Image (cartoon, rainbow, N blue to C red; front, side):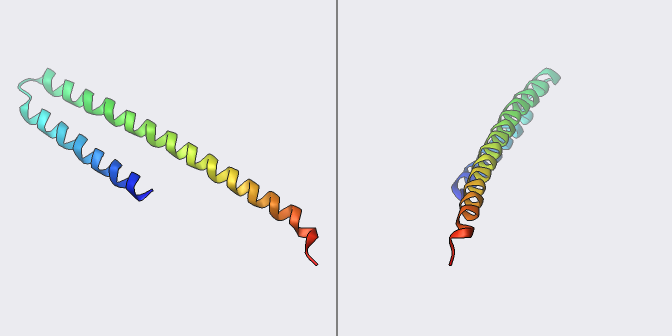
Length: 80
């Protein structure tokens, strides 16, 4: 999990640096707008992936919790 976090942080830094370089090199308003649009598209893609991972991890958590609670309830009457 920590490795995933570090990879995502590195990707964010690289994306920001890429935008900064493109904005510095922009010679016109259309170049600036194009650089910002490209950055926004990539950023939105990253946020969509984050949302997908959040939902996936949330589902895994709910499944595990459900199994734990089910086994706890079925074992309540078995203790002596």
